[in-house]
Each structure stands twice: as C-alpha cells, then as structure tokens.
Image (cartoon, one colour):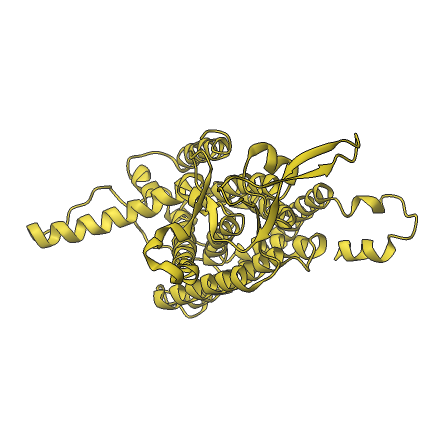
Length: 416
C-alpha cells in the first residue's frame, strides 16, 4: 500500500519518500510494526480471551506443572496472523504474485486452525476439526500453490542458455563503465521445476529427473511429481508445527529461527549480484518476500513475549497450523524445500518421534499382545519432561539445536 503511495507521490519532493521503494527499509518497517501489533495489541487480545473464558481444555498427562496452565487462554494465533498480514498489506507490493500467495496461505491455514480451535473451545469437542478436513484443506492449498507456480507468467527462474555442445552460451556486450567489449553468459527466464539441493556442486535438482522413462510425457509428468511433493511438504510441516506446539515458546521460537534463515535465503535469491556471487538460483521478483518474512519474524518474536514460560496465552491450532504452512510454502516458493528436513529439523524430530512411538506400539501389541513404547511419551519434548527436565531448559536447548541447524542450512550455500 505504501509502495503505491510512493508511485503516486514520486514527482513531489517529499523528504524521506525515496526510502519507500527499498526492500531493506520496508522490511525494517514491517518487522517494527509487527512487533508493535503483537505486543501492544496482543496484551489487549489476551485480556479479551480471558474475559470470554476462551481457554484450552487441558488433559492431565502426568506432566509436572501441566495442570497449573489450566485457564490459560488459547486461540492466540489470531495475534500472530494480524502481526503478519497487516504489515505485509501496508509495506509489500500487492501486485507481486509471491506476496499474494503467502497472504492466501496465512489466511487459509489460519482459518482452518481457527475452525479447529472454535470446535474445541465453544462446541466442547476435544477432537476439534476432523483430521480428514484438515488434510483436505492442506491438500487444497498445495494444489493452489502448484497451480500458481505453473500458470502464473510472473513465476520464473533465470537459467543459463546452453549451446549445441551443451556448454553455457556467451555473447559480446559493452561494459557500461569502461566502454570495453566483454563476454557474458546468455540467460533466460523460464518455467522450471528445479529446486536447490544441499552439498551438491551444481546445487540444483530438477523433479523432471525422477521421470526420465516418460519420454515426451515427462514435460507434464514432472509437474505431477512436483505437485505431489508440494502437497506432502505442506501437510507434513504444517502438522509438525502443530505437534511441536506442546510446551511454552517451543513452536514460536523455533518458527522465528527458521523464518529468519528463510529470509536470508529469499534475499540472496532475489538479488542478482548475491545470487551470482554465491552461484545459486536467481529468482526474479522474489526479493519482495523479504518484507513478508520480516513481518513473520516480528509476529513470532512479539508473540513469544507472552508465550514464553510461563505462557500467558497459547497460540492454538490457529497459530501452529499457519506457522508450519507458511514455512513450507515460503520454502517451496524460493526453491529451498529440500532444505526443510535440515532447517526445520526440530519439526522433523517431533514428527518422527510420534510416528516411531505409534508404529512401535502397534507392532509390539500385535506381536507380544501388549504395546511397548520407545519414548516415555511423545512428541519427544514430553519425553524429556517425563525425565524431569524443566520446560525452560527443554525449550532453550531445542532453540540452540534450531540455531545450529539454521547455520548449517546457510552454510550449504557454499559447502558443496
């Protein structure tokens, strides 16, 4: 919105107006406004939730200090959503297809989570929204993302053109600074199913490589494979964030760390100078997503002010489903989704701990007549609670692991 204001007033000599086009300035403004919304508005929202007695029905799982949280308001994810959406609407370019896609993702998954929380709180149904409807919503979002990436003319990546010998084609041009003739690579913006793969020299992976047997049909079949991968990623990461939201500040802090890392990746991928220097995929117009992720970081950090131990508010599914989905779709858009198991390693471990626990319990029950457990309790953060670790220690150590994984993720830009 403010960017459009700049275009209207650009002919007038207004002090400070020239800063508005800059992505750095708008990102800084977005994160500051997001922090203000989540801290100032958040406090009022918490009071409202308390007055309406919108609290979570906590089951006694035998965890130390768990029942002391009874009466803590939930559905605080509304605070996070407002902290993301409002600054993005104000400071990002709304004619950018990537920004529109991220806004739709945030609102859509936030709505699914809100319905789930509403059923739990107001309908007194502990199960909430049926799992099949959650999956249906996540699959629908995945199809929307694929359709946008496939049909939108604004979604392209820049690739080097190869000559008849398979080498990168070059051409002669004039250096604007020296006036001398120089040789540069020929590039073109194309539709592509390529993504980034870590620790590999060329640093790129094409989903089309999975269907070499299809011949001419590979041109459309690779998009089918791509669609299935996107749906799986969105569903997995969204649900994993939901599982991680089990103790105060864990999902919020972990999401902030992952978001900050993705922001760096988006910035360098959308800057042709940095992309060329790092020898990574350049994606035109992707830099605008830095404003969105700045608002995301501000919202999660601001919400953490009230969600840290002992939590004054829970985000509920309204927040957790949206956070996971945002990280998944953002990674897909900037072509870094294969890095998710590394970057979002905490989410992966939480998800795997539940899968391992349930699978082993069912297997041993069939084989021995009684179910046995690998962990004292799952997700794995509850396992450490059962072992006597206090919540703040568990959360802090998980954050440290998250930071280490984030650093390793960034290192993959150069370590190949």
